Length: 214
Image (cartoon, rainbow, N blue to C red):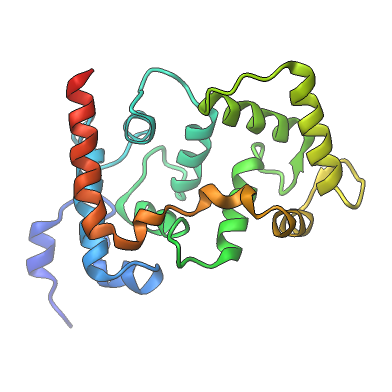
């Protein structure tokens, strides 16, 4: 049996997994997983120092705002929290971020985006769910549109996607719709994950500077 004594002494975070294991299951290299661990430790101890990412910490890291509730942040948190135990562990963090890697399979990105829109987790995207997500995304981007314009966008999108005309969008319809409108999952790729070991330290420093200016 191999001994992981050296690493287990260094890393005592709950839910910690070996970088070699995570690198074999994601698009990240071992050194990139180690760089992600540094980021993870920063985020997971930013509010509650327990080495786990809580929703408040996640929202603060994503949007630098822990007070304003965000449906978008809530949904991404829920999808990262694979074990559904209210926190994001290191393994969940790396595997979920892996979906956003430029080299991740397109199918994985499409499936993740589908689950993002499927608010009630029924296996379908319903019109009301689509509308809620459109409103949330508009809110995040500070775009202000009239109610009529929003209804028109939702109706047009839903009619185009719901090719079976059964009042809901299933995974096959979603896949076909996204292939016609690839911009829908453009935000499912974060280019700086391509060079995480270089990008993240500056990314972390930048957030600290912005926080200190508040």
